[in-house]
Length: 473
Image (cartoon, rainbow, N blue to C red):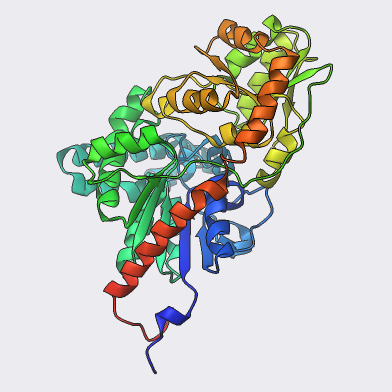
């Protein structure tokens, strides 16, 4: 059979992310970019998406539609990209490991059936999680001694990683793109097996993402740092979402050059200017979970002038949403605060445009938060809202450059209230007009070429370095 002329077929990129692909704004933009420029695109991620499927192939190994048995696994906030992924996977420690083999042997067989079932249940719920944690502690200890153990430790952190790898291994691509450290060993392994390059795009500052938690620093930071260090060293392209993260990675790993800066900007949408009405509507949209300043925002509303109302919209764990609802009710703020259900990712900007102020009061308790430059900052801007955000370097620089709104100096009810009450209708309308102008510059179209060109060059170098293949699996 004659060799396949690789120059005559479309290039093909594989995206891997520990999230529901249709709901992940950054991954979806990546896929749309390459699909729109004539590439074949396949993405491997988690189930549970609310948004419609993209025009390109998006797969997950855990849903019934995939014809595969869902994998069990222990999912913790520090292993998921965000609380949304955590709530979608929802596995418990009890399901992570089988009941120890000793169950069912003598003297268990001599127990009455009821007591035997109880023993199985108790050891499954208590013994298995303890065993799982002991194994993880051993993995971490070995990583401290030698970084070569980090890869083995990774595959035991969550058995969904193996499921993502197995499904991805059925796809042959020209380059793999790993989104976040949770996908990096998968892409690296696939690239080595298939003889193709891979790239790494980090949405967070992974080694500092949960640095305010002592247990996380002891149990996971070393593993993550080892995975990133080796993964970045061999990646054809490394990219990130903010300049602060690029600087941190450059210094931390001694990189020859800084990672490529690709900010979290939505595609351009021309939204009409909408002046304030009698009620001034304030919006928080995004993942609804601990660590995002939402308690301080809720507690601050009692100090807001009466024309302001707050809507909190997004996915989150049911128990946390219930706790916020109880907090609102206890403060007597049910008429001024709405907990709204999430909307599909593709509708975020349009739905946000019905509000007046976009709110994000993020505590700066870690380097990850200090360097944050989230989707919502640019989505609020694209929607034509005034912004009220934490005084953190990346957001502050852009807000001041384009005169988009007001800053919150610290995350407390009093500070949030002062920032909100500092707006009047005239200033809100001015900031909204500035946002619509800034959106013409702060959009995905302004970022996309740099990402496409870098990955296209990576594929070209990879093709030149490997011999022609007789076919594709």
